[in-house]
Image (cartoon, rainbow, N blue to C red; front, side, top):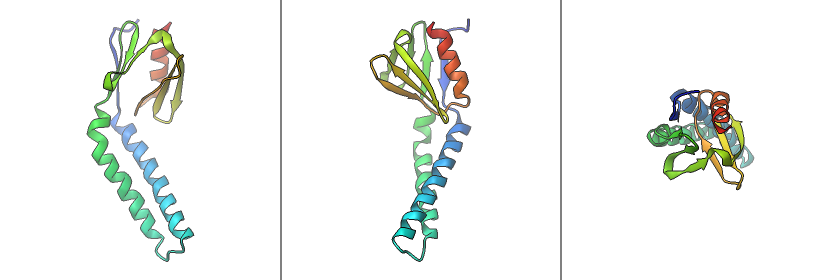
Length: 129
């Protein structure tokens, strides 16, 4: 078995890719809203959407990319003191570059910006048995 502790760190490329997708959605949505309002300058929605997500990405990057989840002998631990006993994990689900962890008690946690969410899930599954 793999040596303990196992760390899941945020991947910079996954972070950038996720923000590029968010920017595209924000740009389209802002343009659509301006079109609905009858604005003759719907292109400004694209600029605003891109600027908003770029600023968000830049501002949060140091915090988001520093998050680390870790498997110890019987616990999955994350930022902010989150602790999930491995035997309490009910569901692991991939959501784009995130891994959602759902406990038997209904608590939900996100392991964010994983380069390979399927590999993260497989590693957790291997250690919870």
